[in-house]
Image (cartoon, rainbow, N blue to C red; front, side, top):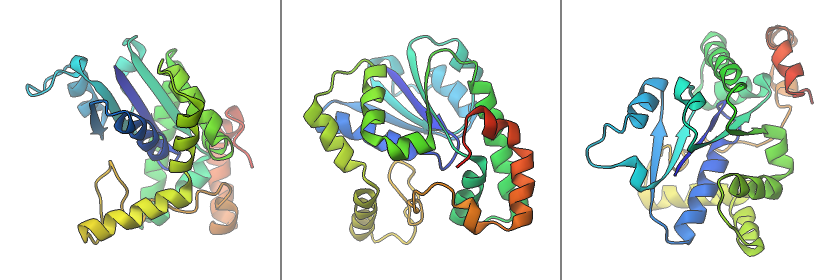
Length: 230
């Protein structure tokens, strides 16, 4: 099985990735995890070019933020895709990476382009960030139904508690104490700044009026299409 968990940066992909991964870990089921950074690496992954691992022999859980044409053709993969208000994505990315306006804009534009490509992919489960935040337990239930994995109510409740943002922050702190790392950048866990407030609508308070007007006009169609206005 191949489970692709991706979407716009800062849109809940890490929450979903770690929640799904945690389920299999608790069940003592062997999994292969992948952080696929670009469409080039996605292509190599699907070509199964790694001589040490046949992807068809494992449950593969992939974390990605890019698009590949293979998403349209592979019927056996499970695409789970998340989107967020571009203005909130902008704020979160800029603060996380200490980028300037221009660099952040380029990343958000790329994320919008990827999402527009994903719209026509038939085999996918789509989530908006507000839905994930406000309906976390229901989202977890929908994910496991989509990937055809039976999960009990008790297991759903356990994963719901595991994926609480405060619990995630505690896990983050514990990882730092264990590793003595200054900036734990392993994408399969969390690095020092990765977990932010988790709030919607940050852009209203953290961007200037000129920046808000610029971004709102730039992404107006996208915001309206997915009903992302808050």
